[in-house]
Image 1 (cartoon, rainbow, N blue to C red):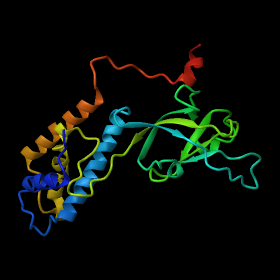
Image 2 (spheres, helix red, strand yellow; image 1 turned 135 degrees about the horizontal axis):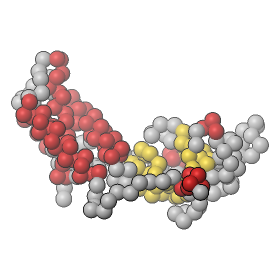
Image 3 (cartoon, rainbow, N blue to C red; image 1 turned 180 degrees about the vertical axis):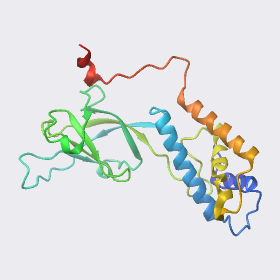
Image 4 (tube, one colour; image 1 turned 60 degrees about the vertical axis):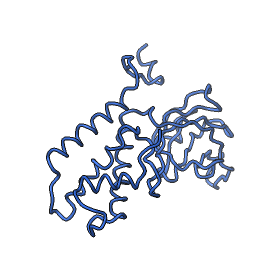
Length: 230
């Protein structure tokens, strides 16, 4: 099922704002940016609501070794931008294992603890645009790493682009959420009925993505802490 293209979402937003496409306050450039910002915000909420909703799996290969003079052994890193193909949509890691999907599970730690953490630890450095995974000093050199990660859908740029990551049935939430445009310049208020519609539809979207089956949710236990219960 095809989603709503940016041009249609922009037209819906103009209807909600009770104005027309020749309004100098609400130019296509302004409305497109409002819709992009709203798209980013909704995806971030979906990420936090259900970490399994938008995920991918890849096999990372280590960077070519470039050992600095002060290092006693290679500092193993995995730069996302130099993977084949490059990973450009990273949002958060979900699972990291040695070698493949059946390999030993690795554990995240703070960067300042990484040197002395022992075997099987890592940290993620950099922004979402340019992340790098660095593994602990005692971890085996030259390993491929199996990574399951949450991703950012592509931005809305062209009029034909559709909002990835949002179910088609809930894409009306984007122009509703963008109705904060009523307040540009501090001159207008969000109409009460329309605001309630936005609240209801957004709540329905988040409820829909939060639980995708009938089974009761389970409490998650960190496998590295199981020994604490012995």
